[in-house]
Image (cartoon, rainbow, N blue to C red; front, side, top):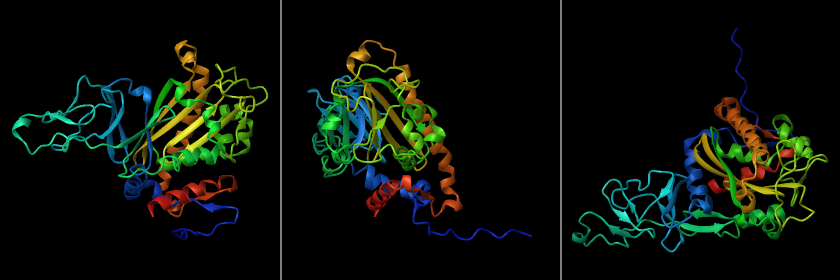
Length: 379
């Protein structure tokens, strides 16, 4: 006798639980395309560290939503952002992730050539084609802004207010911009960078970062350093919440050993605390007394996200050649543990048993605000 199939999912849940997004939100290419159009291609997007563009002609290409964006510096050293698309026949102008252009950018297809301000300066037979205006057919620009030592881009025709979006996330989390300014992030240097290719939807990664209900299960090193996380408290539990180091912990390191030089602006009220900040749609900022860890997510498909993580220290620490291993290893393990968990969830998002979604327990209820935000952006 064949067993009867399960009944249709019941959308009613206990008052102590909230529904998550349905599984389709994590697997449907049409949903991902809508997120690209209305989130990543409209909002301020953290693209590269300023040190990735050290001089005129230095360039990096980054994926922002469905668009390849070319970032560089002009001859005057000013930041410039362009669509990585030749204005002639649409060939991709730069095919490498990073490099150094000597004098200009030249399309490998028909040799249309652009200066570092995006102006068309040369092309075969250009002088005999008066209808091809050098300014009119220059590279299409995107808006760029430098903040926290990173280059942020906006593909919107009229960018959203940086103050009311990006900076507001800091105010909502810490209560005052001065509390972030104490870390002087823009003056720090990259001590280590690791890139992770995660086979999971970008929203799963954000949801994971926002809660600590899972911490006791998969983060033994982190909960040793930050014991309160073993109780399931969120990393962003309330305004200006900083998780305290354990009594025997000397630094934010994989073994609890003493860390590196403390950042000068950190007072005694913050010298043994960890702060986590989510800047929607794709940045995590982690503040500890002696360094700052910045995650930048690059959503590539409904089921794939590249995450580039920088460990930032005082320039003197990096220049000294200090051993950063214990410092880097703690959050590297956290990243690997988190991303493995997200990859474990991703296949199940397509299951008919998850069509109506799952549930958020009380310590995860703040994730519902993120779901509401996503839904409102797509409405």
